[in-house]
Length: 121
Image (spheres, helix red, strand yellow):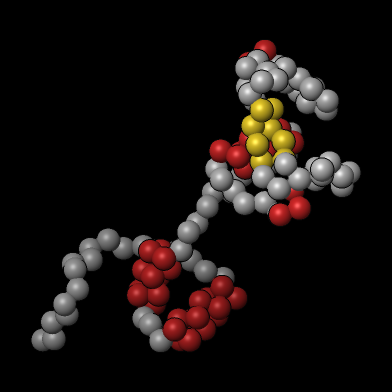
């Protein structure tokens, strides 16, 4: 009996695919010259899957705050997202700030704003 020098793998993953999904999966496995099991292991280990975030109720401040705290790169034309801790109250179009937002920073970009109006110096 042939012995393999691999760690003992006892856990099983099962899933169902449509005909189209299976055809694409099989094609990728063949192109990579891997077994289906190895292909799935490599996909799990080497991929970075991020959660889907629903943004239907997000304000511009919410998006800028999330971008700032999670270090998400934005287009160079917008510059960087910065936090201004000195404002602490609603300003301009930030009318959604409530009692729980007092003391929170106002987030802005150092380049052009999102509406296309130039705010660059």
